[in-house]
Amino acid sequence: METAMPSKNKKMSTRQMTIIALMTAVTCILGPLAIPLPFSPVPISFTNLVIYFSIFVLGTYSATVSYLVYLLIGMVGLPVFSGFAGGFGKMAGPTGGYLVGFIFMALIAGFFVDRFQGKRVLQAAGMVLGTVVAYLFGTAWLCVQANLSFGAGLAAGVIPYVPGDLIKIAAALAVGPVLRKAVRRAA
Image 1 (cartoon, rainbow, N blue to C red):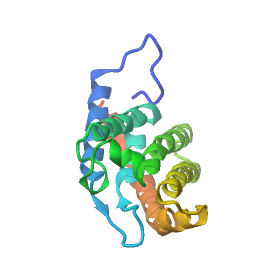
Image 2 (tube, rainbow, N blue to C red; image 1 turned 120 degrees about the horizontal axis):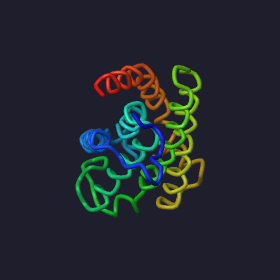
Image 3 (cartoon, rainbow, N blue to C red; image 1 turned 30 degrees about the vertical axis):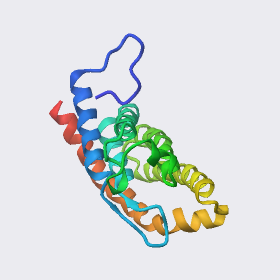
């Protein structure tokens, strides 16, 4: 399975497009499922968990494409974002920075997962680094939208989510390689 960006002369296979579409569908199903927190406009979301799994199943390039397709589906108005919301307003709202940050999370975490196959500590480090970058985008935008200081933005949009995100990373590291092998065996 391709894990890198196709060259100019290389086209994506039907199989690869199908798996991208399937992972996009999984993101569209799990992305809206969110647990609202009373003290924050940022809900607990499963979107990042799906991205972690997508990286293992698809590789960096295709996982990022899958997430970008999900973003486009949501931006045109389908209710695939957290809380069954859709439309450009969600991107422009307090959680829009996290949605954008997930693009970079997919690229950074994907690089580490692809580059360091079998080296779980390095893969975990890449997933944590990618998540930190997503947090930075999300927190910066949350601060602008909600008129918060950076510290208040961290308290509302990052700190409560760290334990859950570490659990998601651990789950992806445990299940992701198994999914990757299963998809490659089915090829």
